[in-house]
Length: 242
Ligand SMILES: C[S@@+](CC[C@H](N)C(=O)[O-])C[C@H]1O[C@@H](n2cnc3c(N)ncnc32)[C@H](O)[C@@H]1O
Image 1 (tube, rainbow, N blue to C red):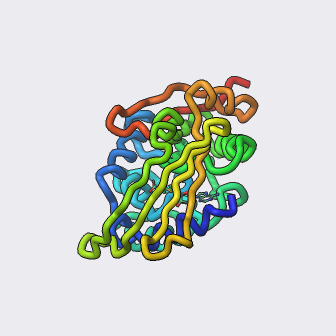
Image 2 (cartoon, rainbow, N blue to C red):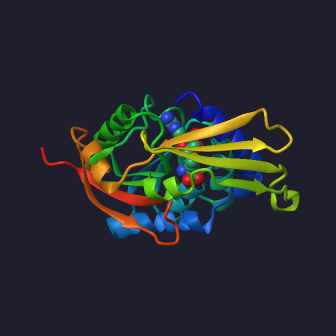
């Protein structure tokens, strides 16, 4: 997991000028919380909150939000919260070791679950089970192996668009290890092909996710798949029966 801080901080420095905003996707994420927990303000813990757009959208929807983020993307969160007139409790740290307080009605992890090995996911899922109130819900985006496998070998070139907040010309390569079920997403500045940055993401089918949950204190309530966005699906989980 040693690549995590460098990868997200570096790519955040490339894209933050354009993407450190409260986007429609962030508002849609806040909407998922309402869809899965009903009306009423909730106490929400967001893991790996990146720039903080979803955390701010969730606070704008009336919830009490704590956001945990390791990397430099979090530098944008206080500004985004201030611009939108909401309060987000930002915990700068590693969600494997930090204490975010709690308990929480909702633990959300948008676009990020799957870093490290199965034991690392189990450790995190066990922590999530411990952070939830009785009846609380975990909402976690899980990477879909079928979609990522179909991208194996695909390359992408992105021209610089400084006017849109993308000042760097970039290249990207996707690969997928079918044995380990791990997608590798590698980026580099076109002018510096020798210096590449990769994220490695363990993907799980819903059936494999259900097996992964064994012994963590969580059980899978259901999965939601979006035909327009098939690289991940939303897993909805709650406390397992004792
Ligand atoms: C793919 S990014 C997504 C960010 C945000 N959720 C979004 O959708 O825009 C994953 C984020 O999780 C953060 N992250 C990964 N592992 C973490 C850890 N152990 N503790 C805290 N944050 C972590 C990364 O730094 C990164 O910002």
